[in-house]
Length: 476
Ligand code: ADP
Ligand code: MG
Ligand code: ZN
Image 1 (cartoon, rainbow, N blue to C red):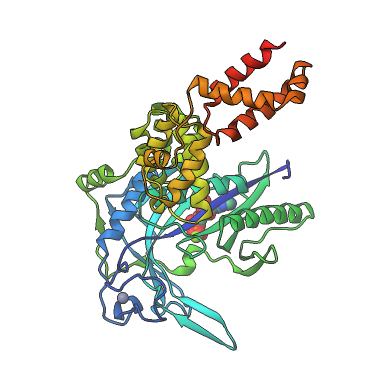
Image 2 (cartoon, rainbow, N blue to C red):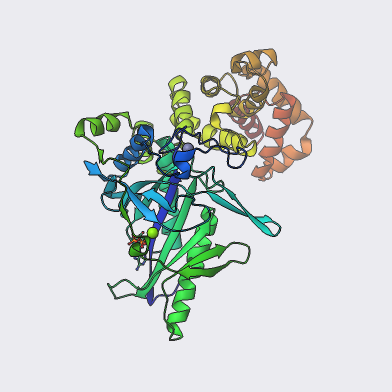
């Protein structure tokens, strides 16, 4: 990064809302249908049709606004954004310009760093052009009229890492609120980045470019990084940044200019005469506010406090609502909060990541995992055996106690039994005993290994250690 210049970034994020029907008609939003199947005269904009707002879409944007500390406007209106493009049969997109539903919010990306949100508005999606079928381009308008919210940040972001944090937070909130699936690869979450640079001491914003077409977090980071460097180098060479729209090419790690940047006036926005203003009264706002689940930051803080967990653990455990619920159900059964966290963050996450499944489809119930932890804490099995029991539990949906009994895994805590095995191992290992007596303390590991293998790992490790040392040191 260049020290003399400060990057300035504002993100425009489009999130596809999880409604069953489109925003102004009753067509289905189902993904993957045959081309031009989910369509009707309304979403195609035939003359004389009347759009009617989907109530659910409105509730979803209000949820997002409240979750990101926005002001919800009592009155907002829809506007027509006019432009000509083959994937937009109407010739205009219904969006919001003046008076969006939400304004002036913020999200916290780190303890001491807020990114302000300028506005969140409702709009409809356009269709899709398909260019990879030989000499023709095809149009699929299924996507026309799918409800989107556009979340526009203030230019408060100053590095690609901050952009990444901001996007991660947005995505997490959208998913917590259950209003968007957050899938960037499939296009339900899209991000355009506005980027400029300015001399460190300057307060004035530099000329910006807008980079589009980044379909993963990794691409957003790479594209921003690349654009910052390009701008700094250009300025240092005495060049001037021109305001333009660039497309990111992830394969070439390069961006190409597609057009000069259009301004708002190019779209000839005007209020949509077919749609009545949206009025949101306070009563409704309060009702929606009450239905908002505990959000990631609040949950994280509560986990730290209530379960006495390190911040790192709390962050991982609250990365999704489902994982957090799973953990909270485990600690209803065991009070060993930290051990429960270790199991969930370690063994459990490893398996669900490997199998690419959701925690909801994980084969070990939270109840059974809690009981497994209790078996160790009650000294019924050792921590090591618990790892084996966990493996059995993955395949058989039995209670851990049943598995332990069936397979005879109960810990040996009988002193005389353990002593007998220690004696046997000692008498078979005169050389190692000599080594130990001559000061090679590390050889203890050998003895413990032998004893554990003789007991198939079932001897209580603490007792083995204590009794073994006592016997060996007797000969010192
Ligand atoms: P438009 O409607 O032309 O896209 P906006 O003013 O609504 O422009 O801004 C769009 C996004 O660009 C916002 O996220 C804003 O923060 C960001 N932005 C505006 N000016 C700059 C700039 N000079 N440098 C970086 N980002 C900017
Ligand atoms: Mg814009
Ligand atoms: Zn329709």
